[in-house]
Length: 150
Image 1 (cartoon, rainbow, N blue to C red):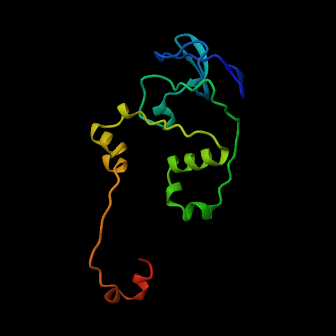
Image 2 (cartoon, rainbow, N blue to C red):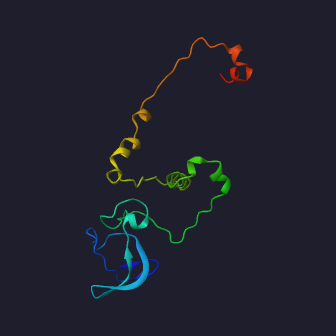
Image 3 (cartoon, one colour):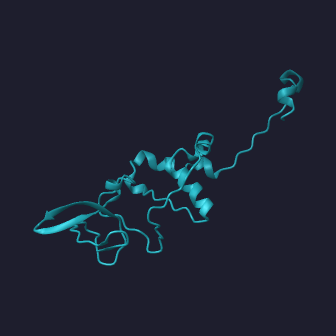
């Protein structure tokens, strides 16, 4: 196989979705002999990379995906401590996508999640709009601090 960073490598892979011409993730590893062939590393599944629970095959990358080797994004600590929406991988990916003006693609595959989590992914209440009417409020009893904000 051909890698941009490491050049040509021989990799033994038994994944069912491995095929010539696909783009995937190469992990440099110590050379080992597999069925009499020297393998210079491995092609990784989502489970092996820690990005999902899929171990049915190696990760397939989109052909249009542009990867920059050794890219570093410096994030000020204050940005993280005061932005709880950035505390997870998804929040940080959303922020980087917005800054770089790239679309955010959610890598989650629902079929790999336990059944009870499927309904949490798209709760019905997120798509509904609700309106509440509050009547007969005694603003004087609330005090000026609260009433000024109503």
